[in-house]
Amino acid sequence: MNRRDFLKSGTSILSLFGTSNLMAAFSKDMGFEDFFYNIFSSNEDLNKENNNFIKDSITIELDEKQISSKSYVKKDLLTDVLIEDNVYDSFLSVRKKLNLVQRHIGYGNFNILSFDEMLKIAKYSNNINAFSKKELEFLESIFYYDPSVHGFYGERISENITDTINKKEVKKIPHTGHYLFKGEPEKIYYQMVKDIGNSLTLTSGVRSIVKQTKLFLDKVYSVEGNLTIASKSLAPPAYTYHSIADFDVGKKGFGKSNFSSRFALTDEFFKMRKLKYIDMRYTVNNKDGVRYEPWHVKII
Image 1 (cartoon, helix red, strand yellow):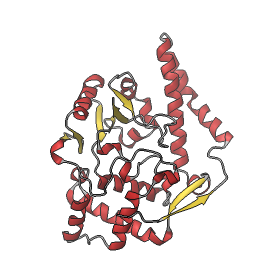
Image 2: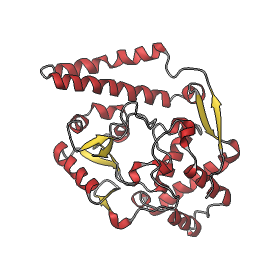
Image 3: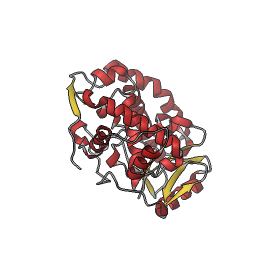
């Protein structure tokens, strides 16, 4: 399949952060820093670790505030890469059909759905129409394009849009709606639950290309078609480590806060930092160009 040119670039000379906003954010979080230093005042190593933790928390909180700001979407990036107007209708219709397919087969099953299976469901379901030629071209484009044009430098994990998840190699984790690969990922997850406690839960596991495409397009839509911003928190479809081993964890009952800076303030995260058999995939200032994600587990 050939890559298709559907992107456009825009420029802005405004900086990401104003000095006053940055100082205000630090002032707001000083209470957290004082609190944690009081707890760990008798342990120099934990003090040092906690100091890094506070900086990490501030970093992702600032990032989240900027990403949610419409002025940031329109003005504050040096180079914005946007979806072209002439394919925007295809973008919207593809996103709608992906939602309908997920509703048809269920949230859990959608996590491991292949591209070819998605096409068949859309074609033969009464309430979903087959993907059109333009929609298929858009899906190919969003999979095969090079995201380094907008500052995402992660490794390409999937080479073909029709790559599949072998259903014999995954296991559904009870009460989560998510799957993990059998073997090391499943073993590590349950070891984490044992070491941290039953308050830890799986918030995202195995993701097929179709699943990652939906997540990515939903994020793009939420930031008005801006691929540059979307890729800071969601990897493009061919670049997710969730398709080979990685998974996300969170605190039970914490909802969407598990994917925000608030997760870094939980006991679960404190305990995660002490585990020697896992690491964070996306650390602060990582080379991939992705925001800091303390909930994203990389198996060592």
